[in-house]
Image (cartoon, rainbow, N blue to C red):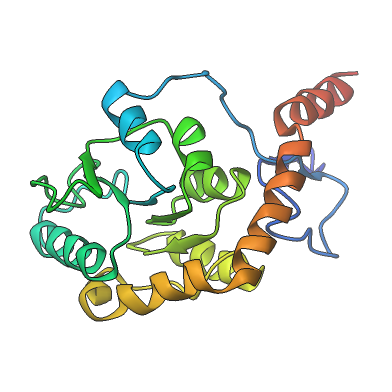
Amino acid sequence: MDPDGSAVHVLYPYSRHVVPVPDDYPPTAHVTGYWFLDRNETLDPVLTDFLEAGDPPVYIGFGSMGFGKGAEQRRDAILEVLARTGLRGVVATGWGGIAPGSAPSDDVLMIEGAPHDALFPRCAAVVHHGGAGSTAAGLRAGRPSLVVPFLGDQPFWGAQVHAIGAGPEPLAPTRLEDGLTSRLGQLLGVPNHARRAAELGARIRAEDGLAEGVRVLEELAG
């Protein structure tokens, strides 16, 4: 509250289609929709060539989860699962959540990172750590998502993606070796996940959270 006791207005930059607005939210709580920074970035030519060389791949990356411990084991588990399932994959090493390494075949491309808004729509599905931004990008792209949560709010977003039907239950990073194959099977093999993700993507793309936030601020400023 303000020093005079009046309620403070709060803007929540998430989509009501992902987390429904609670019935007990006061009028001072404004759920605007996501705030996306569209920079119209282009993909690296090597990545573009890979995408055009075959079926849409699965994206796997853990973004800013720069934990050195276990990074090699996570890389090896991911590459082994991709080889065993025959899936095409783009594996992003990020800040160290997945150790760099050589791709086992032409069906896998190892990268450091890429702009999600340009890459995710060209993937069959996305596997990420469940950061708020990555979750929003995957859902906006209309792609089924599997969350591998490490910390903080990531378990919440993972559970919410599953609750709204856009992906399977979250998978702990320590269970990649024994759980990733089955989760990928659910991610790609359950039609409802793809259908629900596509529906949500259309609804999220129809929102303009940034414009709504500006509108609310201008209204409050009188």
